[in-house]
Image 1 (cartoon, rainbow, N blue to C red):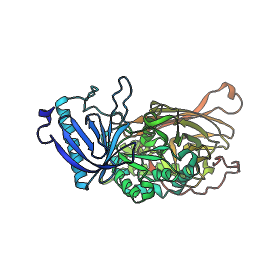
Image 2: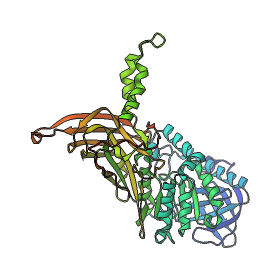
Image 3: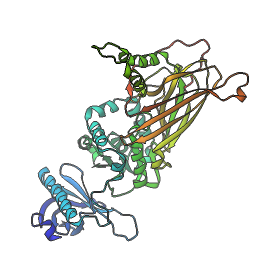
Image 4: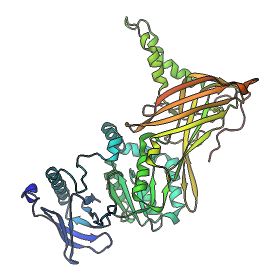
Amino acid sequence: MEDLLGQTWKNREFTLSSVSELSSDAASPGIARFTSDGLHIHQQSREISLNFDLRTAQIFKLGPVRSVCIMEGSDVGKAASYSTGVTIQFKNEEECEAFHSVVQQWIKKANVQAGSLPNGTLTTSKSKFDEKIEASSAKMYFHYYGQLLHQQNMLQDYVRTGTYYAAVIENRADFTGRVVVDVGAGSGILSLFAAQAGAKHVYAVEASEMAEYARKLIAGNPTLAQRITVIKGRVEDVELPEKADILISEPMGTLLVNERMLESYVIARDRFLTPTGKMFPGVGRIHMAPFTDEYLFIEIANKALFWQQQNYYGVDLTPLHGTAFQGYFSQPVVDAFDPRLLIAPPVFHVLDFTKMKEEDLYEVDIPLRFIASVGTRVHGLACWFDVLFNGSTVQRWLTTAPGSPTTHWYQLRCVLSQPIYVMAGQEITGRLRLIAHSAQSYTIHLTLSAKMWGPGAEQGGIIQTSSCKLDLKEPYYRMSQAQAYPLAQDQQSQPLVQTQ
């Protein structure tokens, strides 16, 4: 190994302001020395001496001048354990940066020569996240959430932020003295809530550049900061020094599943949560109901009128009209709508985050059955979601239902290019299939059918069917506030959506 690394890194030393074991608060100066075999850290006063194999150890920056080094256990036949390690503090930021630079270069040189890690996995192998998600999509995703303006948009959703705060603070009994992992911590706001509720320690895991802002925000709240560690990385890849009693996260996207962060939430459960641990939130529900909205249908259809021009600078555009028409109807509509547009009581599909497998989120198949409450044209399926914080003291729901206070998720509607007609009391059946794709979203397949109504219905089958295929990644953000529509004479006066 010595020839492999060369003299550049051999015996490189860093004087440390302090060294302390993870299990102890006692700290004293020390030395970190790189050798051909790895990293040796020595604490002078207490004579702590640890050797780290940099090919298997985990090293994280906790701040501008603080880092943690965690050693992999060596129990044969058991899962890797990272419970042994030290926290080290440097004299200044330059020393800290130089230390981490040497770590990366040591690993790079070692792996180039060795070709594989001790467990036989090639260093070029992709993580599970990389295998599922396109690199370009991941880059844009982490860039988006690495910007403060987008974090501000979420923080200013007071329904979202206020519900999380209440769910945590009202359930102090679940957090006091417990270890918490914040999955996709963003600005670190949920980690700070957990610390306010008395958490013993919070590990805030964030893969985007927002991790640096989170460190700065948390450091600015010193009474809480001493119990929060920000770790930059993906939950699929990082290692933590201990198991968690609580997982907290805001993994919900449009239609609950967009962005595919729920899969990371479930992976974090399997990797970090104790068998008796809690998840905040623990359950999600997708709600669905057919709707009628002639204004919306005409608005979408009219977008394609441009392509009906037969003399656009001497060019006939009509050959592309049909394709453009279908293209506009392939976009799910994201906006807030009047719940009186629903023409049947909603149904819901449950996703239990505490029990489901990651693979259960690759395809979500939901059978649909409704009884129309009015006679009208059905223009599509309206969807929204809610999640449950099942605390020991208080249960709280966060809902995005129409008629409830609007959130930054709004609601979502899948609009049929061919509406179907129904009578009051008529049965509507169908299926909603959500198929995950590598751009961190889903393809939506929707079919709605109206069964025969009236004399002989028991002998008849489906008389109308309409289907559509939509890309959840490319919605039409309508963003108008819910409009008041006049009620049809035969429409029920009672609301169809029961808010929590």
